[in-house]
Length: 124
Image 1: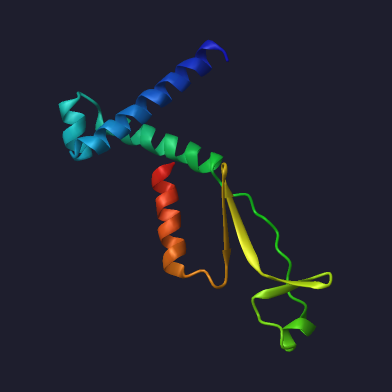
Image 2: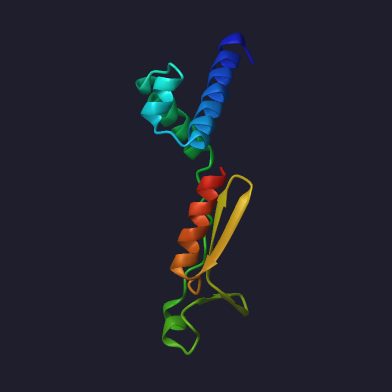
C-alpha cells in the first residue's frame, strides 16, 4: 500500500468513526457537524462515498437456481420444488453478502425476510 492509498484508508476509517459517533450522540447531522466544526457537505460526501464502496463490496453474488420443467408444473409436484436428477428439492434462493449467506424459499414470510435484511444492513 503506497502513501496515497494509506491516506485514503485513514480518511475512510476516520469518517466511519465520525458516522458512528454522530449516530450515538443522538444529534441531527447538522447539530453534530456544528458541534464538531465539520462541514455538512463533507459529511455527506464521505457518507455517500463510503456507502457506495460498502454496497459494492457487499453486493450479493447471484446464485443460479434451477427452473422447473413445464411438464413438472403440470404434474402434482408442489410448485416450490425443483426436479434435480431423481430428487425433488424445495426451490431456494441463496443471497451471499460478504461472509453472510441467506437462503430463502417461497415459504419464507415476506415480513421475516424484510426484517432480516434490515438487520443485516444495520450490522454492516
